[in-house]
Amino acid sequence: MANALGNKVASLIALLAITKLPTFIYGSGTILIKGGTVANHDLAFPSDVLIRDGIITEVAPTIEAPPGATVLDAGGMYVMPGGIDPHTHLDMPFMGSVAVDDFFSGQVAALAGGTTMHIDFALPVNHDLMAGYKLWKEKASRSCMDYGFHMAITRWDEQVSKDMAELVLEGINSFKFFMAYKNVLQVTDSELVEGLQRCKDLGALPMVHAENGDAIAWLQSRLLSAGIRGPEGQALSRPPALEGEATSRAIRLAGVVGVPLYVVHVMSIDAMEEIARARRSGQRVVGEPVASGLALEENPLWDSNFTRAAAFVMSPPIRSAEHGQALKKALASGVLQLVATDHAVFNSTQKAAGRNDFTRIPNGVNGIEERLHVTWQEMVVTGLSTPSDFVRMTSTAAAQIFNIYPRKGRVAAGSDADVIVLDPRVTHTLGVGSHHSRMDTNVYEGKQIQGKVVATISRGRLVWHQGKLNVEPNSGRFVPMPAFGPLFEGLDEQYRRRGIFPYGPTPVLRGPEAAAGTAATTSQSCRSEL
Ligand SMILES: NC(=O)NCCC(=O)O
Ligand SMILES: [Zn+2]
Ligand SMILES: [Zn+2]
Image 1 (cartoon, rainbow, N blue to C red):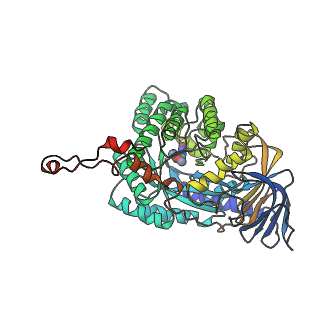
Image 2: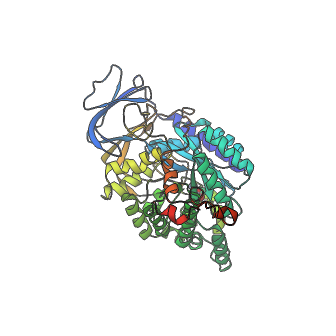
Image 3: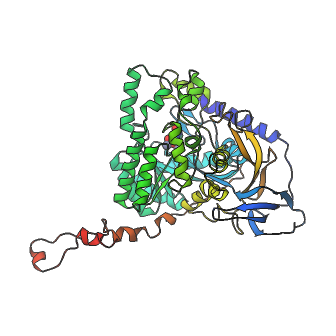
């Protein structure tokens, strides 16, 4: 209660602070971006871009400025589709606290960092999906940018199964299953397979938080008994093996059911290798690293300053640099597909709930504002990836996977005017002093970035330009995401050719039927087709 009130006050203060910023009036809803290099995921080329009334209307070498248009000079800069963060937790109640960024403050931060759409995880209320959906719609009502929802499934019954169909009609095409957070969000394997099958039938993408929650609970109690009570316990209780095991289990179960799978926040070599193996075998598995897993390393968890250490507590944990390096290479080579944040922010006071017991520190770190800059720095500035690759991993892949491409994720005539301008020459430093989130810490504090988003256009409005925000509450839209996206295309054929149940084997005939001479199809003969 006290927290909720605190959040409301903080929310009001943030709103006042933002509305006090100098605002500026730009043209007539027409924006011309001149002289930049348009970077889409498949091609980068010099071009002007014209935007009218929320839509990109023209992409051409030279466009005359229409009367009254706002003209942005993008000489020497990249013009790219706005970022899509596929994994956020705004205003989320979790581990006895409520995340301090709500839909407005989190989205303001996102826009300042070049992200123009995010997909938030709606949580059921007492396992009730429709109540959770209703609550999340209310939470999102003050939005100032486009958003969608995933829905978490926290137990299995007939009602959940029915509600999933209802939610698909509402425009939710992905459901998340937690294999960790025992006795809170965790599902059993039997609940998971029921959910995977239902996702397959509905054409919705199942997502997993893949860690072995039972083994983690066992390790947590052993560590606490041994007197390890600080944030370092987070790393020690959630070793990479437990992430790898759960990732492998989820992938294999999805393979048995015959449904694509999306693995959220891949933080370890162990999990990444399982995804690589599955993809090599032809299975449709998406791996999502998060900015923190690419750029940070676990040392701060051992910091003697509790507040600093606790700021880094998330699940799965931030790991050694070796894991981050491997994840970046996997991302560059396409083993992993897209970068998210898992933005779930709890301030120092909230994190202090676990001062004497690391299992009570609310899990989560910031990133919604930093994701594009961190990815640019780690992937493009280092030469691992090209600007077009950057677009793929921060925007286009999410739009494709969640079936809203090319409306989102592309700079092209007819697409939504969610566009950013990135100047690769500008250097800046990340941290609390310059961020727009309500957080009082920043896990990227002091990180130098070469390249800066200097303009963000959201639904045709210039909302961030030259360090100034011009956002309006209630201006964001829910973006419905249709079922049966590209990951489902042709999938049945693969399973039919491999003779996997229910496409393959027919019963072995025995007794009178066999005597009648009807031959059974063996699994072997079906599999030989592949
Ligand atoms: N990741 C994390 O530490 N917090 C948010 C909840 C989740 O995604 O597991
Ligand atoms: Zn998770
Ligand atoms: Zn998450």
